[in-house]
Image (tube, rainbow, N blue to C red):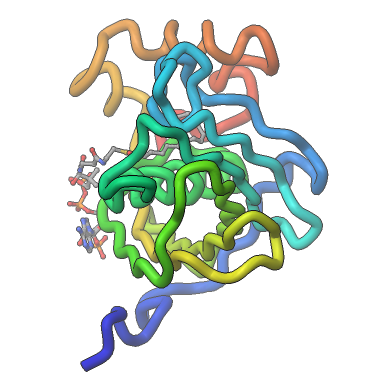
Length: 197
Ligand SMILES: CCCCCCCC/C=C\CCCCCCCC(=O)SCCNC(=O)CCNC(=O)[C@H](O)C(C)(C)COP(=O)(O)OP(=O)(O)OC[C@H]1O[C@@H](n2cnc3c(N)ncnc32)[C@H](O)[C@@H]1OP(=O)(O)O
């Protein structure tokens, strides 16, 4: 039996292109929220993922496994690695399509152990979309962009309006996103995003 979902992207997927105002290749992407476990600088034991747009309009992210990230002695916790992929995949969808989206489904293949101290290089690309659905996949390599593959992941993100975050999360979510972005870039509302798709 195959360990992976067959037929990727699914039959309903059509090609998706980055938004006309997507950040150009070489752009370092800002954290999307200071308190985000995946990318926020205020979370001491967080992942501190750093992401940038690559030449082929994939998003490449790096993350160094710390002692606080262990599952087995000396090895990264699997769920935490899935979290790193969630962040990297979400960053690709959010930044390339310039639309807020949330993870609906995330599938992760753990191909090789990831030791504490190693740096994962995660390359995420948009595979297709249908309506509010975006299919995205990523590969994570150990210690170099062309290092051995340690993980692969595929995900479905669903576009939501910003009210998703104010209704289900924090009523001040928009202000908090804006505060996080203020130091490095402009507020989401001002970046030409579809805030109410
Ligand atoms: C996150 C902050 C972003 C802020 C924005 C700033 C931009 C920053 C830029 C970049 C950085 C971003 C980095 C973030 C990284 C981390 C992301 C996360 O961890 S997100 C948290 C975990 N995920 C949830 O909490 C979702 C919980 N689920 C839901 O809220 C709903 O289920 C939701 C919105 C996913 C769908 O609910 P419905 O009622 O709106 O829509 P329905 O009709 O159910 O689904 C739409 C389509 O998707 C399919 N679908 C939904 N779930 C599916 C599933 N599990 N498997 C397959 N298909 C599914 C459905 O069948 C439907 O398809 P058909 O249009 O009919 O063809």
